[in-house]
Length: 345
Ligand code: TXA
Ligand code: MG
Image (cartoon, rainbow, N blue to C red):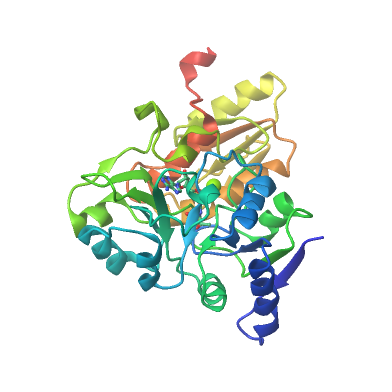
């Protein structure tokens, strides 16, 4: 059975943290909140514990895990060398939603975490629960997102419970996460550094600190994707997802043509576009507020699973700022499907 342990600002939480720290020290798994999404943590130096993460998630074993640390100083325990530009990024954005890939110091982090690539992805999360857990543990936590592989990442403890109930001993419930999409992953072992996954820290924010970077965020761009996670189907609710332009008329037409084929249609889109033609409309925030759209995206995708919808239309976000991370996740969820009027006439 999975225990959901609520950690609340107003109560004494020492005992709650202690039982999860004990669990981790004994090789168990604990789900915990970060500022991006919930993570499924195991002690990163324990090979048996980290193997359990792959089993609980149903994750392919060639997809490495991000290692979370509680202080910047710990980087030198796991990575060597530490390029000057990496130090600049850590100073600018840690704690925060940025994962840096380094060459690893051999023999410290479990092989199942780095999957023998000779590199390690490190991040210091900006969340009081994650930081307190890491500091009490006094060690590194390997933690992918706490969803079953292929499902949208969890942004609430209840999402973790949907996927992991009975599979893990503890969920630390710290409420809803903030950013809502996963950290930006940047490979600091290449010159110039390459963004492998867009996320909470945008390319412009990074370039303002260290100058030009490359973007390798689409699996199609290279035959051997550098972040193995990019090649798998991701972020998918039960029903197929179609992208659609932010135009009320196009959406109504799409819903009508799918409904005419006896489909039930859910739409995920901004507040402004609410129409009463679809069977369900999940509004994720004001169209101009890209952080809101990111924050609510996975909750909306998961909400579709609670309906009888067999088609999901997801309204496209502008390709700027956080919209880039939102569109990266939506493109993967849709697996290339985009509604256009011509196709359906
Ligand atoms: O925001 C986040 O990053 C969340 C929270 C829990 O911290 N974690 C997360 O982990 O999204 P995960 O495992 O779902 O995604 C990790 C991504 C994958 O695409 C993986 O391939 C890549 O990071 N990655 C991890 N270590 C790597 C390495 N050494 N080299 C290349 N890519 C790596
Ligand atoms: Mg994930």
